[in-house]
Image 1 (spheres, helix red, strand yellow):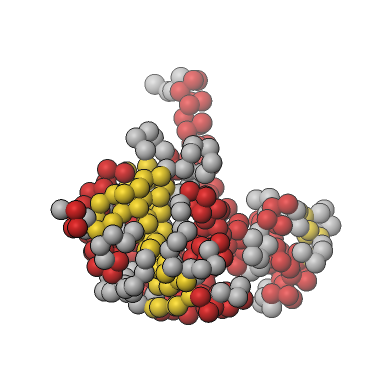
Image 2 (cartoon, rainbow, N blue to C red):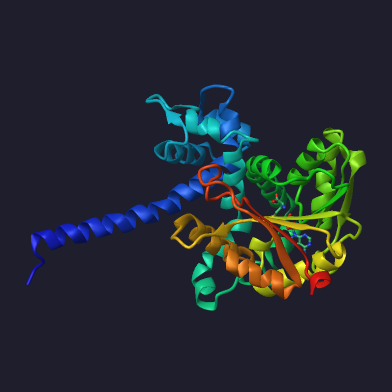
Length: 354
Ligand SMILES: C[S@@+](CC[C@H](N)C(=O)[O-])C[C@H]1O[C@@H](n2cnc3c(N)ncnc32)[C@H](O)[C@@H]1O
């Protein structure tokens, strides 16, 4: 017996829904190529033809460039006139170099962020990152060390991502009176730079992997902060610089599994010593459903074994590392977005009070 009309209709709608999801495949890859080829910057000069774009790119086949630009215009990334001229629209402008959308698109569509997600089925099955399967046995950070241009995109994006959160953190946490602030896994120093700029008496230590801190130096120099910061490269699971009177860990714990977090927090406790605050800034999920947090959590797991945790989960990690909570400050609802890691948790060595 054939399907009733309403069942045929539902089946067709379900098929359309699947096709719409699969359409993401084309859009995602066209977007990635569009930003990597820097087409938005080429178009900033004014309308142009596929042949000219091909010349500017040094491409081998202008006809392939034209096909690509037609695909990109079909996805709304630029405009195409009937006589084959291409021009920038508002989406193209949003994807110009140095904009936050461009850095996010560069980072997410590049192999470092993409390839571990290709094995999401394995991640779900095994409950851990399988980046090793796609990076020849390496983890994400080793992959980035081998691929400096992608590491630079990641750093640029982290900067764009961290900048808006910093305002909220500076408003809500009293950095005054801290003379030596150590930013652990501080990336290119977005948070530390802003702390130093707001507190002229403070000095800072930016601690990250050696290849990351060496890139960050130029930015501190440009801002006139070079003489107030020490750049230290190393592995935060091994040893962390001592002598700080405040330690920062922003968007770091969300990258790691529980055992790694406890190791890292223990290293922080040893370096900080009794009574010296360690300030964790991260995502903390509430009890309600949050599709945004679910997606980011799965991505954290796929890329490096991390996740978005509840406050209770964090407390367990702090206790396991011999730390106790001194301050918990969640952003006021509506002042930050769900995708911004903005909860502040200050923890201190618990031992003096035991
Ligand atoms: C998600 S980024 C956060 C950067 C910065 N805290 C921010 O919020 O903008 C995580 C940082 O941890 C650093 N990292 C990863 N593994 C590390 C290790 N073993 N030792 C030191 N830093 C590490 C990465 O290089 C990266 O800069």
